Amino acid sequence: MGKIFGTDGVRGVVGEKITEKFVYDLAKSVGGYLNKYNQKSKVLVCHDTRTSAPMIEKAVCRGLNEFGIDVVCGGVVPTPAVHYLTKLHNFSMAVMITASHNPHEFNGLKLITNEGYKFSAEQEDEITMIYDNISAQYYSESAGKTVYDESLKYDWAECLIKLVDDDFTGLKIALDCANGANFYLAPYVFKKLGAQVVAINDTNNGELINKDCGSTHLEPLSKLTPEKGCVLGFAFDGDADRMNAVLADGTPISGEELLFLCCMFLYKKNKLTNNKIITPYVTNCGIDESLKKFSIEVVRCDVGGKSIQRKMLEQNISYGAEDNGHIVWGDYNKCSDGLLTALFLTKLYKEEKYKDILKDLKLFEQLKITVPITEEQKGKYNNGAINTELEELKSTLKKNERIITRVSGTEPIIRVVVEGEDTSVIAEIGKKVENLIKSL
Image (tube, rainbow, N blue to C red; front, top):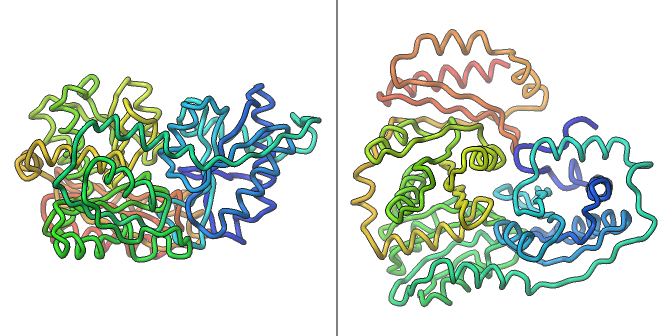
């Protein structure tokens, strides 16, 4: 079949790439993989609120059961909770059914190891090979069973409450749950910690997941937070591994500011292992310059959670983050965690003023552009069709100016980042890059 997995599992439009047969065959391949390595204890299967989730869950369970794998279905559970629960309860692995921040018509699968990490690219490649030759490999003569246990998510809630170890009484917090996987747990945990919660988009209506709400649409939260007199507002994406925030007056906290605040939270508590952080190469280079003051080294990696995870493990680093709201607290969980980030930011808010911390953050100007493309154009780009022209344009750049272009691993777009010190200059450069890509 060729490449199945993207930068974060499998994702696509339901009825097109994500069909019942495809999911069933992929689940059998995962079962074959577990049988090959004799890891067939039990698998945790959870999902976000999308209406396609029951169909996909059924296909996953059927495929795994057919290969002798027992399944525990946990219902609607945030992705970070699934990472934690997989290790806590000794599951052989987990399958999270979600398309993260994508619209309702998308869905997908994220595979999680028994240690609570994302499956590596090498593991995904091996599953792809089994998928292409599934009929005769690693079959089990005895069928597995499926049981349901929707109480598991409370183990994660109790873990969060213990980690925060604080009292939020007197704090009024706004939450936008994106009608996604955090629709119940986020308000529940904040209330358990004593906060007064004002929540919107806190239903399990999967048809509305991410629809003009959540971490990629902060407008409703920016309006709600000052209207209701909240001190902070937090917005999650569909599977809650991502979070973006606004201040009391509704002003959004940028991704770079969020990254910096969380970094300083750990630094001030002396919990920044080796005084290093991990962030992708697309993150604003002003982060590097700003952290030098604290002797914090910034280590760069490729875009995506798997790249951050691998680099954190390789270099024994406890903190990794992207500038889009994905924050990995390595000492507490193995993936980016929106709710944990919101809780720690609330704790930081009680201890110190954000504005005082952010005085040490100096960023370069950055322009971000997304250019829609077709599969044919994606192939041309990946084959280097515009490399020469791009390199010529890059050769004209001055100090502290750079151009980054990459095909999204989750959407049919090319992402462009232009960075520099002069807003008008980077706008002009950005237009040239956009026109160049459109010429495909």
